Length: 125
Image 1: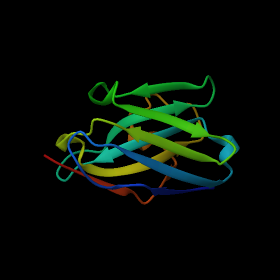
Image 2: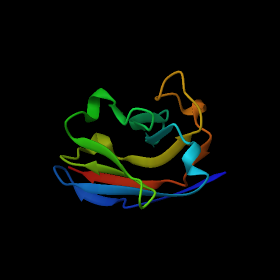
Image 3: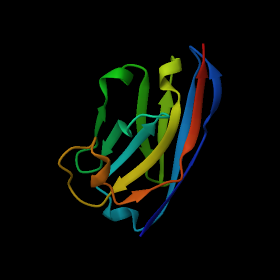
Image 4: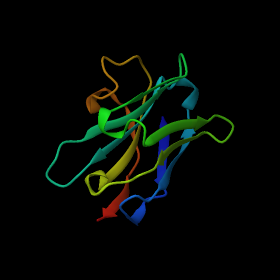
């Protein structure tokens, strides 16, 4: 089992920045993908950024490329999402997720085995 706890959400004005953290514990050595998802009210959960441990590769949804950066500190067992130039459309609940196998697509939420409780990000115009 893997336990995930997110933090760092909050309210900012458009153009501002936030850094989300996801502290992991348990059998984290078995994780292939560490991913941030978000879900806005009335919308489907969306994959935002992923870190593939096999090759150290990172992936981003087009809408956040150039603004968000995903990273992982192995020593601290923590996943981060640095979010810059935030826009009102980035407002959502952000979730950390982990998959302990190779996935068909990092953006498919059903591929993930472990989830955090979420942290709210609100961006005002």
